[in-house]
Image 1 (cartoon, each protein chain N blue to C red):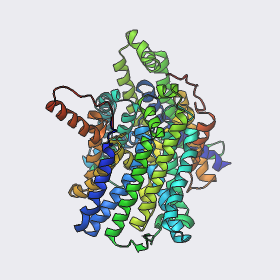
Image 2: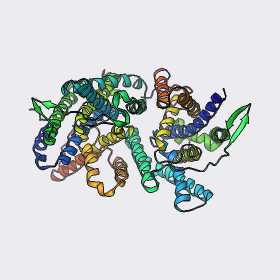
Image 3: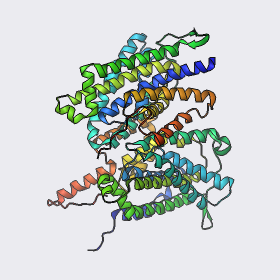
Image 4: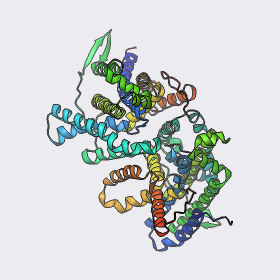
Length: 292
Length: 327
């Protein structure tokens, strides 16, 4: 019982991180029809940038975090949209999806060659240690990860539904043509979603790297989990990505403990195939009308 | 009017003739690289059918290559079957798996096939790594014999290279015929305008599925050539990243151009040999070039060449002769 509780909690913690990545992925997909195959690398890179600051340049941690976050938002939020997405979007969805795959290779190999091929410990930014809760030993880190992720997601949800800017952004996602007619600066709204995506990736990166260690190849695992989370939950809904993230995190952790460690990755994949077979709109998604 | 002979066919036959005699002076390693190029080109040819003709992203082509390679090794080493039957089984197996994978994925719109194949590629890699009794796990599968053709043992590098070339030629001609057959025309209709194709009675889903499954079978064929070429296989070359590289090959060569995959595979197999002096930077350069190419000319190198030719023609002949046919 004790073990099960711990497994569920750490599953929720990894799930919260997956959810952050998956929400960014769906937001970008909704507003610009970009399938970002580099999403995992987006989560890998900020931690590497921070370590490059602290280890390579000898900066204090807070400075490295500030500079790395700002740099990442600038380059992989705005720059990604301006340099990769804008010139390619007119060619259609397919070349752009493939360009993001090339970007993933670029980021991964860049991190490996310019920084390090080794895994490096990353300082935990949330409290660690153990907590006694209802007689069970509970990891404080897992609890704080869930708390931080939930705060970020709730803030995002409030921003999207309650503020004027957020609602304009939502309008852009739902129908860019009508939004433009109504005077919404569509381009700026799309840029905003890319910024939010980069911001979510930064948060996810700082939360996940203390657990997995910062390594150039982290993106493969996280990216795959984020895709599965987005599709299992529902590709066209932010709340779908949220549900999907937690489901995938839980399934992943429980499978590692009760099925087999060698095939832990296979269980979420099986879940993905089942969802596509029986509920292609996702567990929490809504059906889409077909456009011709 | 006499029917014009397809320039693609001329290029294939001429290229095969040149490639037969070209590497007579090459060393063993040079011949190995040339044969590897042809093998990867076969896999990319299949992927081009999926991506360039049916417009679907498949991230499992290297996994199909792996299935073909493992199936061929098991059948020729453990079961002692001749290589030819292993080739057919490898292709057939991948075709079947392609149908099974594509059927659920293509029921839904968007690029769900990309995600299903992504999952499948990861799964194949896991199985190849973990099921040691079957695949040898991370230690791999060694001593895969080279086949013999018409009673001649093909152990020499030049002999085996020519054998790979002959098989590649047969597979390429088969695909050339397929693309020009009514089926192939349906694939093209699918790519040009799926809605119109549907309104003309083309079953979009069935044809997309067929294109994907045939593409997968070509992955299996390539795997059947890969195993005896390298003579040793392990899960590494069939990982997801290898599938990504195959996809980039098709894009760089020019997706939808029949001979694009040969060009793309040449760039991606030969370039690392030439760029060895850059060390690890090669992949970074390659990825950056692919992004630039996609931004400037998403039709790849073949598209660039076609553009260049059209510009030359326009300069020579002021009256523009519209060549309605897209290669």
